[in-house]
Length: 515
Image (cartoon, rainbow, N blue to C red):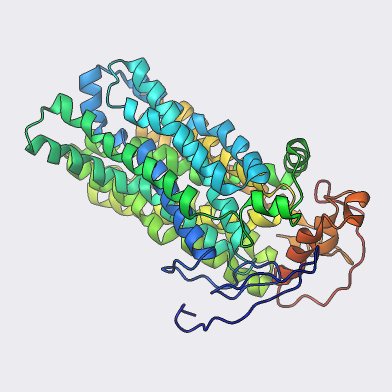
């Protein structure tokens, strides 16, 4: 349904807490004011406007983080970098976001995605500008570390989409926001060589040109943070400050949300799974341009173009993953989401092995790499088709843990397979593919009592309302603090699948932590 086809109507629903009339929206919404449609090219406030701000700011962070690899042959010669220096810089570029993403998840639960996102972007912007004045290997490594911290904005991006879109569209919204953000990793492979060549043409020396080029991603990152602050909105009903002041939201406790997020075993499995799709993407972004430059003897522009094609697939591949997740959910419920995730990511591992083995032909290597990229990013969309359902009270922490898993596994993969000279790059790619297949197997252990898992159906009598309400104490439930969780439970009925029989609310023994 396009925005033009939908005629705005009064969507007034009584507030469960205060009985007040909720605001009108241009988009159709559910009882929690979350959009039930997704208008890709719309700027309808607050849902689609927040989407546009979220993906673009994350896109700019990706551009900044991976601005160095396309110019690495030049930076390497200017600074006298060794293979170990380059490998360590690749590791640190993604290591910075590991703990930052967990912290970002907690910040989203506490102050909302708007302030959390803008803050991390502005705090890391100086490191991007400092990339223009680095003169030593240590300076290069430090700049890449602090610039990479900005990738924590991914957590606020996914949290934001889960706050704005209903369960029937959350996979698609997360897929587009994450995918178009990740697109920066491909776009920068084209952008930086072009900027560098343009600066050369106006009279700069190679020594100066690559340094000036870093001001472009720095400026993009700065402007995106300001746009988030001015145009973004935390929730459909307003920003966190307003909602807390009016009593419509309960002030979160950092220790409480961390406890519920960290104690949920599903969070850890999804973190590992995401580590071998998004983590793989980060690792490949660090090595792919130099790999084709050195292995096949192509020039810098061609290597950048090939490397860009890996990331540019994000424009449709990650959204496809979210679309598949939502589509299978309508027919098979949560079990469809889980089966799709396991299948697609396992195929990703097989293709990764193929990429490492097919190294005698430039054309064949590029072809396999593009197909491999499609499955990598579709897997990312599929992971975040599941994440929003793990916990409602600790939604930010679960997003943060999953995102941190992506960065942590990227660090591990980069360090083990692509740092130093222990393995050739092509052999490291083969071993990485084996890791992908092995680390996707635990998806089979994810089980929701009310919806089931890959091999087991739902527990008799279990309901989504009880699952999410168990995150609140009896006293908190008596005060109505779990109302938002209850509304979410009522709005995600499709996760039971088309064949599920109607169930009435019956308490279950297990909480979301222990079930």
